[in-house]
Amino acid sequence: MKIIDHLPAHRLQARLTLVLGILAFAAALPAQTLLGPTPYLSFADSPFNAGSFTYFHLETFEDGLFNTPGVSASTGSVIGPGSNTDSVDGDDGFIDGSGTNGLSYFGGGTVTFTFSAATLGSLPTNVGIVWTDGQNPTFEAFDALNNSLGTLLGTSADGSNFGTTAEDRFFGVSYAGGISKITITAATWEVDHLQYGLAAIPEPAAFAAFASAVALVATVVRRRSQKSAGKPGAESRPASA
Image (cartoon, rainbow, N blue to C red):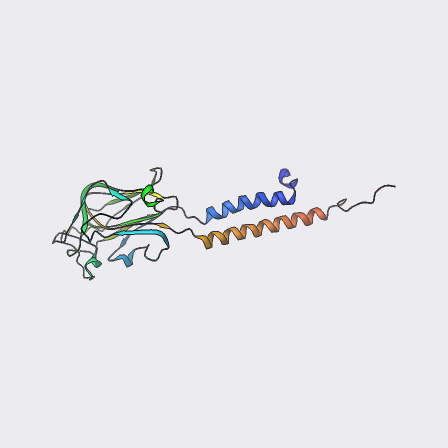
């Protein structure tokens, strides 16, 4: 504290502005948030539907291909339409309790969806996928250093393999530090609507927090200056004859 007390006012202001600015900006960035499992019949049910993104991609597989940029899968293949297909309900243009008229992505064991920062420009901060059929899955997400961001467990499997959609669930994660990959694990699984994006920097929130920090610094410096001006002996003295 004594070091701060002896700093000139302008140096104190500069240092406190830097420190508080960094803290304010960090506070504006959220920690990881796991999302789901939540019911999902169309993209309108996605928590990312109304988000603001620098880029955003939605893979519905409806063209028969897995071809959205910057992501690859370790296993699985596109299937459908057919009596055993369980696409997202709304992909055929109707929400009617059936996913047999759409396409989806099918496999078994663990599938890893890996995102490429080189292709996308930056790792996504928001990633989600819709589980539509198979055994109850385990969802897991990982940061840029492959540290786990957490897991989610599915509990909605209805035992039917004929395209029922009431069981379909969204699994996702939001993490400002970037998401390198997600996994879905089950003996067999069917998924759809892989979605990922880079959230736009929350500039208004960050600016407001930074402005508040600067205002606080100004108050501290002003009070310190007033205190220094009021100390005995602070006033000027006439020179000795």
